[in-house]
Image 1 (cartoon, helix red, strand yellow):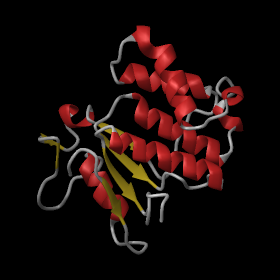
Image 2 (cartoon, rainbow, N blue to C red):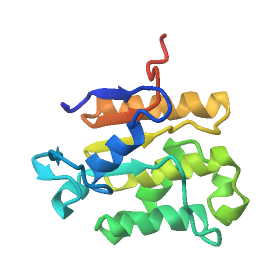
Image 3 (cartoon, rainbow, N blue to C red):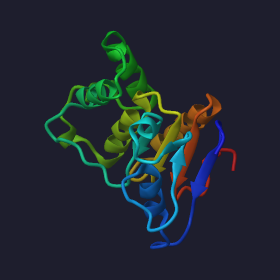
Length: 173
């Protein structure tokens, strides 16, 4: 893939879309062959620094607040602490999470709100490659449109996107 491209991985249930993504992310090892991200072995520390990932099944610590969860991922990405507050607020705003929800525990979030905070954590580390596994699942139509626009903006800024099960990300269709 090249910077700025959006690749949709589409196929019937059970065809291996999620398995392919897991191999590219280094979460599973292929039985044969190999995968590389930005010239680095998939699953390597160097490869992982290039990646933002929104999984199909989100797992959160329910006691965490949305803003703290995203700030934690900002810290995990090794980004400067001095930038953390502004960067976290900016990405939460970008994905359309209501500011009143930022300081509430995640356990009270709707499915759409969880998708938004999941997308925020995937974007906060300044990835070059964004892996999305059904990124708009559970979102209302307005939230799904906003998420698609943010994903398109990520690609327009030079990021590459691999999106599982999205038939179209271009809102003009």
